[in-house]
Amino acid sequence: MLRKFIIILATASALLAQTPAKKITVDKAKLESYVRHLFVWPAAITITISDPIPAPMAGFSEVKIRGSQGEASQEETFYVSADGKKMVRGTVFDLSANPFKEDLDKIKTAYQPATGTAGAPVVVVEFSDFECPFCRQEAQTLRKELLAAYPKEVHMFYIDYPLESLHPWAKAASMAGRCVFHQNASTFWDYHDWIFENQEKITPETLKAQVLTFAAGKGLAAEQLSSCIDSRATEEEVNKAKQIGKDLGVDQTPTIFINGRRMVGAVSWPDMKRVIDYEIEYQKTAKNAGEDCGCDVKLPSVGGTAPATGLGGLKK
Image (tube, rainbow, N blue to C red; front, side, top):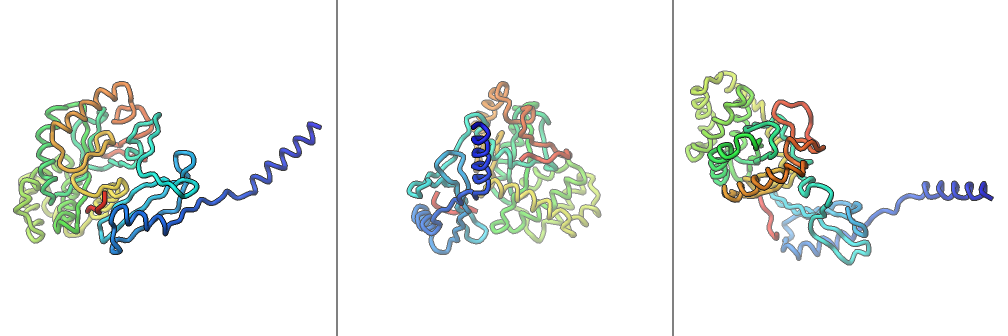
């Protein structure tokens, strides 16, 4: 009797293994129509709807809906009920993990300019554009206040995110900055401060000459720098940096992540300080972000070889 039961059980298991999993489907046309009405997206905006995947909560499937027009885009995550009658817009949180883990997994800081203390409990990552006036405002705040207030508790990274459709010399400035960075990593921060201070004087035509004048006062090799700029040797590095931001859904500058917490626009120092102070205390016990967390989410420092783990209108 037991033998027959085992045979039946084995047969049933084999049949189940051979049965393909039921494919999840959603009515994409219905979703597009609904979302266009929800966000007031006209026909000029192209809508792309991903194939559904199992959602992190039972009874729903996850779809990503992206609206795009030119270089501008906006992506939203929705959860559609199994019967297709209900849809939830928002974020599902795992109470056992850092609420910002999804973004922490996407932030890659290897080979990016850094200042502050490696191994700090708080990591600040800024996505910025050298031609952006709001970025200049934020840069002045960060350079004046951050390390003065937190000489050991913060490690800050700068990641290029030039908005080429808005700022004609921003990408060229980012590439030149990477050329400076390769010659002397610490001099990058002098370049960072100088270019923001002189932002209003720079044009696409005068950028290179002004950068070389700056470099002459810093002891950089002019011929090497000129060749690096002319050959666009660092363009791929800037493209990869910008892709990090795109993967994170960055759609305006400056955008800052403090231990994964997203802060968009020019953030006032008191607001930023409040978040950093909170994270310093929180990480003493949580140990789920920053560089001394002892967790799986790592933000490698410059020169490291380990890879990182990990609204109704469109914005540019």
